[in-house]
Image 1: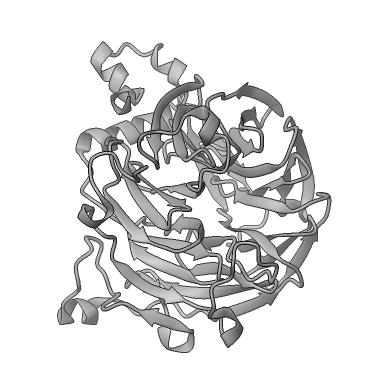
Image 2: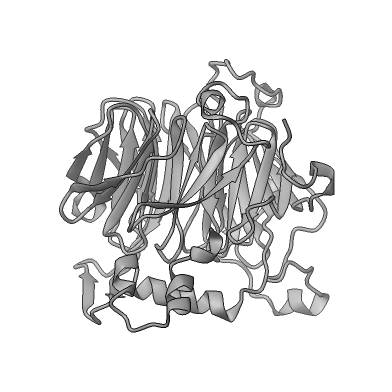
Length: 439
């Protein structure tokens, strides 16, 4: 078995490491075995949408909030944190090193304090969400939907999913803590609605998903039932009208959040599905599974567009459905809409181009990786590991074609694939807008 179809690890470009974060204390410096019960894994990492903080669950029930310097694309104060730096970390938007004049022109980063939150039990999931006092969304009918809140103050909320099924939220501005209680088992994933409404979606091992309204004192608004086993991951579509959830027994479900019903089930994986993510325009859904594959879907039609394999030749279903030693643990879409990253048990993080499925465009070595997250601008990828550390890499980026940028803009306005048929478009353009070129 090989990891790549046409090349080897040595021949692929290596993603440039920026720095490592390590928990303080010598007890964390030795890599924990897979069956360890010391609970110091980094199950989740998250960047703030306003680029101000990075959150990291570093074991023993603790979460660290670290100021993020968006100018230099790294931790704001590396001297006060246990880090290992790899060369220069101050990168410009194109990935190049700034000159002395550039450094003088850059404004100093906003001053934020590093915070450590002790949750008292294992933290399995994290999410950072920001409120927007006024949010406007335009759909195909050129109608406007306004999200107006009585409280016009900006809020930045950290949500932490715990082993007991409880969710703790922390208002970073005021320091106010809130405890959300209704789940009966581990909170495996958390996501904030992208529309600024501070709706929080939670996925639990109690086989349910719940929606919490943090603008209404954290009241539980919706419970979604449809999974017959553990729910591993969830995601909001960019317009917040659709929700995806994945779980054990090969399950992928798409939900209509307005009507609180199942839209469709997606069939195609051979093993437990552990995470999912929508593309920035909402036209695509990616799902990652223990079957060593990432599948790319059109969520509006249920069509499977492409498979990204992590083992070659691809595993037969009978082997992919078992212990294949190449579980895909996590994946995340890049904000540019043309790349995504995956974390696999073969000790590699892969950076994929949406339009080239033959092999990844870059790789990075990460032993026992568990999770990953892109920064808000997409230039940095953070990966959490089983020994409680975090590694940052410079994510491969390229200047996007105007054609692709126009497609992103159009699909944000026309997210449903079926609605493209109502537009009087040339067949070639309609095919391109449907992402048929990734097939």
